[in-house]
Image (cartoon, rainbow, N blue to C red; front, side, top):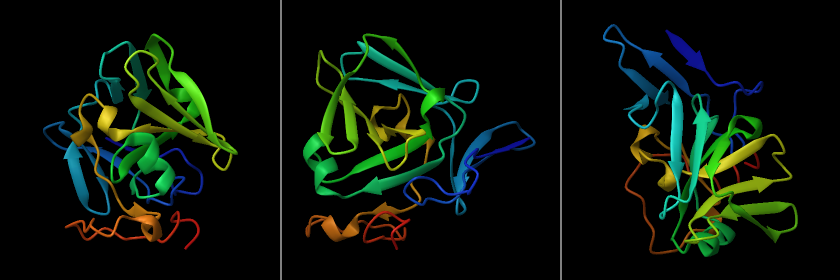
Length: 178
């Protein structure tokens, strides 16, 4: 059994390659991109689940992500309080919310981020540039190791003391800008 991404151009919003979920002879599903893969332990019935620290806000995202990438832009760093973040893109209309609805904040022109109104956990990114996608912070997945990032984006903004030990491509902007 095999599923592939649903994005017509085969590339995620940040230019990550197609993701493929394969079930082998033992029916163990893996999410793969460029040969890297992880068990889909965080997926139940092919669905990612996650939410905030206090568990007031929860979400479900069916299927596999369109793409997964590490972002080093200053805006993501400031909104998360982390040296970089890892996003997974999903079709916007596929993500459903349970519990308290997240609060939305227009962080810059054409950009909306959401967070838990109770504990403040950042959860999503929406950009006018990708109107049909909702980007979920991978660290908020119930099992963040269910996916594997395929690249670094906005590398031109990375902190000088960050030197990842991976061989992933490093794009100066989004992968679409290179």
